[in-house]
Length: 179
Image (cartoon, rainbow, N blue to C red; front, side, top):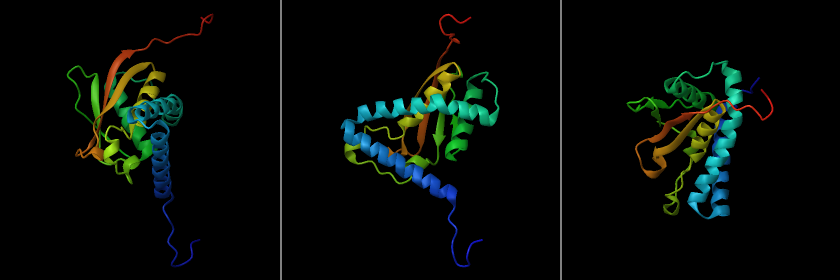
């Protein structure tokens, strides 16, 4: 029981802020280590890919969802994963005529809550981790996709837009000698 007059902090908000600040410290350290924004972008993508490869198992276990039937289904699952793990609900929009490419629009992005990019870091893709996560998670369910940022609110754009494009369906690979 809380004492009268003592405010109880919202633990979800505290966890979100801690995550945001920790991620900021990670990006800052990468900038010091690599000294080149393009190398940092590649490293963030690589780290995101490794997270995506692992987080897809947790997502599938928590949601008990079936395999995606098409890219619209994939987009809905990516959208729900952002809601589940980051508490944000990006808008799925701008479908290509072939329905093989779409955009995720972020009105808010908790990863950039306390961030201002200096002029020297304008080529930095601060949230490139997201691109790697999407690529890694999709690859684990036999979808090869590419993803990239089209707009970034950190760089003065009105919104943050992440584009996802289907490349090809991957074949289930069995280890050599196992049939």
